[in-house]
Amino acid sequence: MQKKNMLVSIIVALVVVVGIAYYMNGQKGPGGVKIGSLSAITGPIVSLVEQINAAERAAIEEINAAGGVLGGDVSLVEADTACAEATAIDAANKLVNVEQVSAIVGALCSGASMGAHSVALDAGVVMLSPASTSPAITSLDDNDLFFRNVPSDAYQGEVLAQLVMDQGIDSISLTYINNDYGVGFANAFRDAFTALNGNIYGDQAHEEGKASYASELASLASSNTDTLVILAYGDGSGLTMIRESLEAGHFARFAGGDGMKSDALLTEIGADNLAGNFFGTIPGSTESDSNKTFSSMYGDGSKFVFDSPYVGTAYDAVFTIALAIQKAGVDALADRSLISTALRDVATAPGTVVGPGDWEKAVGLIAKGEDIDYEGATGPASFDANGDVPGVYNAFTVSGSGYAENAI
Image 1 (cartoon, rainbow, N blue to C red):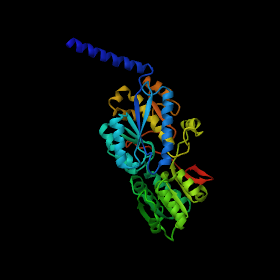
Image 2: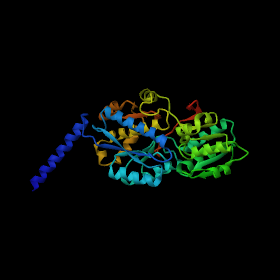
Image 3: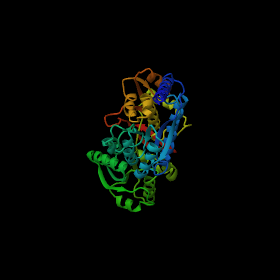
């Protein structure tokens, strides 16, 4: 019996050694690595999510065409949060405990990220959000498992406040969606705008999903301002509020943040009705060789609408997570928490700079034990102690039949 057990142990050890050698020699392995995507296929940001998901899939396709992760193809497992905390918890449970994904890209809406985080934390699973911007995320007790490659609204609030002032607008009304995203953004904007000696005549939260906001708009309307700042979603309450404001003559100008830059506004209200009276802020990209490469690879729009919000950060999130799994090695398939340290390693200088289109090069450097530094579609991805990144912002306006962006 002892000889039989010893023989089994030897066979198992040989299989492990051969498997590792097979991987280290760059040969095609069995695959099976899964990356989760906590998306929002339903809910208030559907038109944004369609393009975000397409960018994530493009990154997966590119990685697999260049050899895959740990020697085999990697798959993207998508789950719907509907931008709701309770739904996000269920979706995270599916990805973490049923699908056994190695790491998660997402969530997108801040409240969904904060809900799903509790599930991922218990399992030691890394999350990297390309779109959650609430300032509250910075102080999450996350055991270094939650990261985001998009800047916090603590800064976007300041940028938007200055942009409004730069338009010669020093009096506004303010409304914001009553969730983690809206409340955090509104707090940052309010503080910055009043510090610039701006006046806020109406200031109230609103709930998502209502058929009409006529009563809220009537309360917000004031003879002292014709400008409404809406910190919400352009596919949801933001669309309804702008349409009803124009119909009732409450406001003539509108400003917003990243969540408001939606194609739904252009199609439902009409670009001609928004040109010159709707503007806002959106996270931008740092000009770099990596950014130019990304543009040359995907700028034709065949994979996704290239200038849609968060497609760059979504692509980068998938690429960075995949690099971290590659760096952590086969041990990370059993202990997913190892990916956290590897994520910081692959995204931080010093190291050979790699970016979009460099998967095979990056894998080769990792196999040699050399450091890499991923600079992605939107710029450097170095994370601070809280898992946040610095960022730049663009101003958007409606021009012609679409949006135009300019660096701030």
